[in-house]
Each structure stands twice: as structure tokens, then as C-alpha cells.
Amino acid sequence: MATTDSRIPNFRSVPPAERLVKLGERAALSLEQMALLQTPGALPLALADGMIENVVGTFELPFGVAANFVVNGRDVLVPMVVEEPSVVAAASYMAKLARATGGFRTSSTPPMMRAQVQVLGVADPDNARLTLLRHRDDIIELANRKDQVLNRLGGGCRDIEIHRFNDPVRGGMLVLHLLVDVRDAMGANTVNTMAESVAPLVEQLTGGRVRLRILSNLADLRLARAQVTIRAGDLTSADYDGAEVVERIIEAYTLAVIDPYRAATHNKGIMNGIDPVVVATGNDWRAVEAGAHVYACRHGQYTSLTTWEKNADGDLVGTLEMPLAMGLVGGATKTHPLARLALAILNVGSAQELAEVAVAVGLAQNLGALRALATEGIQRGHMSLHARNIALLAGAQGDEVDWVVGVMVAEKDVRTDRAEALLEQKRLQE
Image (cartoon, rainbow, N blue to C red; front, side, top):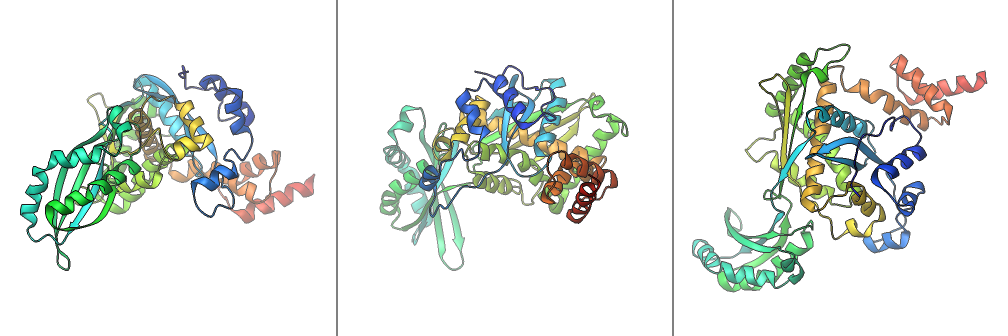
């Protein structure tokens, strides 16, 4: 059942149990689905033991839900698994501001992945390159024999590319790329299998030696895009005029365009939004990270993945285009109970739609960070959330947590030793 309204009043201020009830109502979750979130250990040890090697237990992270998102006119509740404070809150707040202009507009390219077949020891690499291209149809047909299910679903190997490199030690090298439509899978297993299957034919055609047969995580044919417009007036606060905030955000963004030191942190903020969605849905966040950062330096210098501009009305306009290889089938996406639950909450119909939601969250998170940096500074928003972690670390319980947090934030002094001292003081007074 689709989420009819991603706005949940007072979602942040109510206890977790009440939040779960509200989420269940909005996302039409069953009692069994809600039970997965009510108790620890949603991933049984026996299932975990089948996922990786040398399992001795499981490790839990907070499972939150970002509210207020509208993506292509559809309300979406976004599951996010992350340990960093303020990420979910910032994304939710930026999504709330975006609702005034229709939310996030997204698009994506077909789910094309690359498999690489490295060929060494070719005496005549230019001739071998043309030989491979001449046998394009044979190579594609051989690759597609390995996954008849994918073919029936409308996917499969679509084309090939041949790249030539020269290494001063190893000499000339050819790399054959298989371009594969993987449909709703992330596609790693599929393209790896195809690469291995065509290797003997490639050796036969080139007279060379095939070495690596592996996918590329630079999924530059599998792009997700998001756009958003934020009214200048909606950025007005008690301390700042909205038009000034627009200018400040664009100035902050400009530093990320020209300075790799800033761009690294700027793009990390984007991934603060995307990675939690990738993790929540059981996808490969390391692959997504690798592709994103290589894509950020595709023009020769590492730079911002987003753009921020001012339109003719003076409003803030943001865009994000990046590789996003995510799937709905295979791997932990299908085996982890909470990954399946996350997909049920998202209610997406394809891997492309999932990637489009994720890229919208990345754009929202980037805006949240830029807005904070360009106005009061990043620490003000972080402080109260960070203070809760410090209070808990110091041993605060129940009502003690809010009291310790309140004092530390008011003092602008958030430290473990200060929290311990305040806690001791409070307990002596009782």
C-alpha cells in the first residue's frame, strides 16, 4: 500500500514505540512487520551465518525513518540506517521545505552495468580490437547464454566496448567492456558471470591472455538524478533573511566546486543521506561510494557532485546527478528481514525508482548541511543530538538524559567529563 502522506506530526518528539505506531499507520505495516522493529535481533544468527564467513554475532545500527519526502509527486517515507546524529532530522526538514514547490523531481538512466575483461600479451592490439568488435554479436550471444531469467525479464548484455591501454612494464593491454542491462538487480553476480563466460572466446579471438574478469563499480551508465527548488522566503529565520541565505549557500557550494579539500567533506554530506538508504535496503554502500567519488573527479579534478544556483525568481535550485547501482533482488536485499521491511516502507516498483529516492535524499542532506554551514554553523544543529550520545555515555537514564543535555547545550560545553559531573550533581541533590 502506498504512503498517502509522508508528513507525521510530532514524529521526532514522541517515544520510539509511539513512532512505530504512527509509521505502521502511514505505511500500512502488518503486526509481524512492526514486530521486527520492536525487538532486537531481527537478523537471526543462523541467517547471518549464511551471509558471511566466521560469524560470531550480529551488529545493530539505529533504523530511522525520514519523513516529509515527495518524489515525483508521490509521498515517500524513507528508511535510513545510520549512526550519525542529525542526518535523519536534516533530511526530513529539507524535504519539508521542498514540499512547497512540489518536492523532488527525479529521473534515471536504464540499469546498465559494466563488466571488464582484461587481455594481456596481445601482439597486435589495434588489430585485436577490431577483431573483437567484428565478433560483437558472438560475444553478446555467449554472454547472454548465462542468464536466461534476465533475458526473459527484458535485460541482458546489450553491447561491448574495447579500451586500449599502454603500461611501461606490461606493455599493451586491451579491456573488453560488456554493457549489461541488469533490470532490478544491483548486477554484480550477473556481470561477473558473463565476464567469465566470454573469456575463452576473447583469448581465442585476440591470441592474448585474459586476467581480470570483474564488474566496474564506476556505474557511469546507471545514473540517478534529482532536482529541487527551495523558495527564498522559506529559508528565512530569526537571524537571517532568506535571500541572504540563498547567497550564502551558493557561496559555500562554490568552495566545493573549486577546492578538493572542501569537496571531500561536501560530498561526504551527500553520502550521509544516500548511504543510510543503501544500507537500510541491503544494498552495497561500498560500491555506491566508490562510484560516486570516481564520478566526482571525472573531469580531472575532484569536485562537487551537486550544483546550487539561483533561478530568475531568486529561489534556490539544486541538482544532483551521480551513479547509483542499487537493486531490489539478490544478496542481503532479499535475505535480511529488515531490508525487506525497508523496501516495503518505500513501496518502490523498480531498482531505478529506489535509486531515484536515494538520490533525492542525498540532495536534501547536502542542502541541510550547506544551510547550517552558511548560517549558524554546523555545530549548533549537531550539539543537542551529540549531547544525547554524551549523556548516555556518561550513564544518564530516563529524565536525567534531557536534563544533562539541556545544561550542556545551554553552556555550549558538550563533553563526557562535564556530563559525568552534572549527573553526579543531580543525583546528590535528589
